[in-house]
Image 1 (cartoon, rainbow, N blue to C red):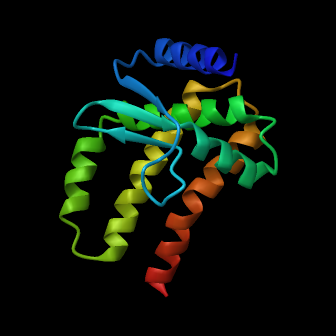
Image 2: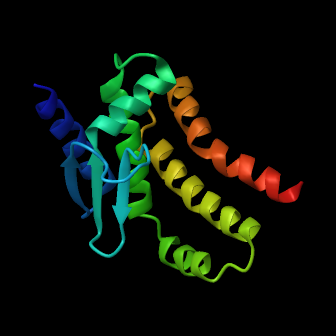
Image 3: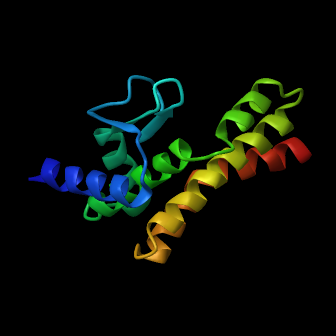
Length: 150
């Protein structure tokens, strides 16, 4: 049943966004991070990691009761990367950074672009719920930029 609900969310957001990106649902992220999703420019694909998304949801909300909403927000964010017209240029600039501060500023811009897309794609989503996810997603970038300025 859960897989069917996830598939419906994926189909609905693909339809709304008009994206042609390939979608892959996996159990676990293969690395040591708690990454819920990953967009690959090379293959124009999004991989979503179910267990990491559940863990993130639980860490942020102390429950997986709203897992489907959380999954929806994470997927919309990854679609934001897939549909970001600036991403190729920003990724090239990221490779050419001369300072850590510059690197974090560009990485933050990449993430903000994806979140902006997600917010437009999900106008009906509970605003406070989504803002909490966005805040916690962007906070490490803001914190790092503050450290670089200190």
